[in-house]
Length: 260
Image (cartoon, rainbow, N blue to C red):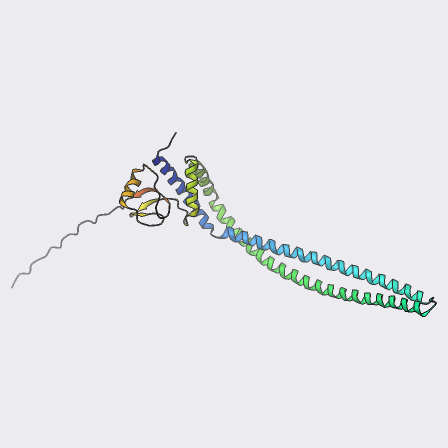
């Protein structure tokens, strides 16, 4: 059944009221959800950094192990070359073997230097891991505190929010899809989340620009959907200002002085 403009406006107004209540509940949480998310991302980043440091440590330990094995291999070769020197037949063979021994000794020196450098790097990596763990631990305390605060707020408002969400789902059923999409678009672009507003004191309830009298008359008729020409919000109603009349002031009685 085709709904009248008045029915559409009523449905939109109801939806706006529910959304405004949901906005208020979310406002109570403030920036806590974003802060919790940021802290979780930050801590995950620290953990990734620590994992990388630990991988670096494994690589350095592997380098040390390989260098130690290379030193052992060189020492074995030196021993073998020295034994061969005892059985050389001429100076040329002796000099060739001596050169091989020198090369292996140089290899040992290089490997020993690499081992020292690796140990120094390991110490630095461990210091970085300790420092990062300390920062991550502090941020985890902050996260636990903010999570506790957020959970407390959520527990208090959870039932109200669930009821409002159920009511919202029902309200959306009374609004045609095209109109609902327009409502959502306006609401997303509106800084205060208001897509449907009344005219108050001759002005748009969203942007507070003046609404001409003839336009107000059209809004009262509720024959067509009218939007604010300044902000694009849907103008659903005109709220007449109630003037409270003050009771007339009592006149003071004046008494004439008698002449003496």
